[in-house]
Image (cartoon, rainbow, N blue to C red; front, side):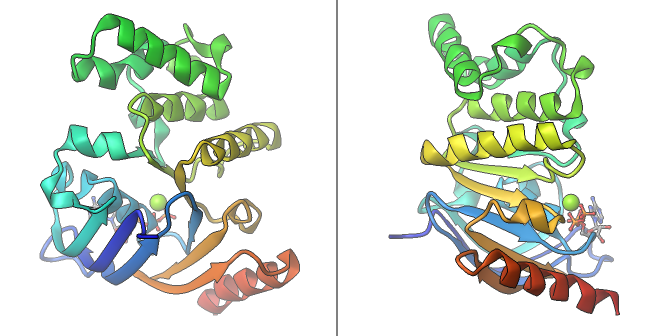
Length: 247
Ligand SMILES: Nc1ncnc2c1ncn2[C@@H]1O[C@H](COP(=O)(O)OP(=O)(O)OP(=O)(O)O)[C@@H](O)[C@H]1O
Ligand SMILES: [Mg+2]
């Protein structure tokens, strides 16, 4: 089956004076898969994610070459609202993503911008709240929530347009064990509902939720690991990858 994301020869720099942050990336992501992207801080993981969701270059300037196809459509041809229906991203800095007084209004924001009728928006809010089981957060102010709850609220806001692809940039990193399990469970629920998930993370343990792990180094995808090996083998391979770069 055709990959849901096809990246060809993607290179990017933020300005003419900057070095290449992404360097000739070729990448296929299969529909319905969970893919993790790992690599040292600064290797370009978030920049790649911004390119995949269209934030680069549509809202963040830079010099981009190559092509990205999402579900058979060239990302350059898609408007931001149409792109948001295909791919949603929870940013590494989640506080920048939440700006409304309640979780409910965060969920309603994108559908309201598309001028959907009130009854449809009400249905969307109920669908998202029941999918993530977050009825208790519905009327809470996102800025008063815990780290894990903020990430749930951000996931809820991108689910309002029911995108096929969800990118989670370091959502698991700063959570305690209980919240980590909560979000991992949500990832499972979303994947079982047919969503394609991309998780960016440093922690070897968190990477294990994926079925494919991409290893990035200095703007390139250096290796691809299928998670059908034993966890011990995988753990050793990932540890080697990180250790090599510290020498
Ligand atoms: N807006 C920007 N303008 C110029 N350079 C930037 C900008 N954002 C990021 N960079 C640089 O691009 C490189 C890659 O950054 P990026 O945030 O994509 O890495 P990352 O792998 O996500 O790192 P981390 O694990 O710390 O989140 C870094 O050298 C960073 O300093
Ligand atoms: Mg990052």
